[in-house]
Length: 225
Image (cartoon, rainbow, N blue to C red):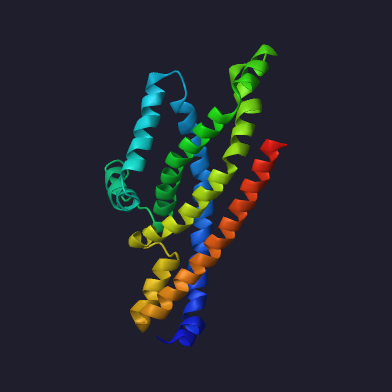
């Protein structure tokens, strides 16, 4: 358990991993928010087909482990696409972004649905009475308020996504857990290395939790005032 050796030799490697962890989390959250918004609007539409598509998507993503989803995207999906496009390949980063984004999107759709339903119905009626179309009312009145209401939950989802990236080490994504496994494989410093990994996660997640609490306080104050 040579902590000094692990800090000197392993810390730079793990820092590279945590950078990728944060980077892929941010990218996946942004893409997932777009997917989630579309899934939410589809689920709340009057079209039975769109509702069914959104419901099936959320059901599949929330009902299956992310580990299985990662295997499907990284191993199974290319095999199917190769039937149409011979030689098609997908790298671990691309598979990781797809897996995380689809996963985030399913949960974001529920977050946005809750935010939209929290907007007072009277504001929608007031906008429609002023002659605004349903689409314009949604875009200018409902969605801005729903997004504001949803921000604390979005930050919490970001925290979950950062931790979920560790699952993607199984497909070879070079995030912090994968980097740790590589380092441990050559040094056998299991205890010190994984303690350092846990410390990195604790620092990042603690910062995000502080941000989340501050955001919740701000918006709870805005609601009261």
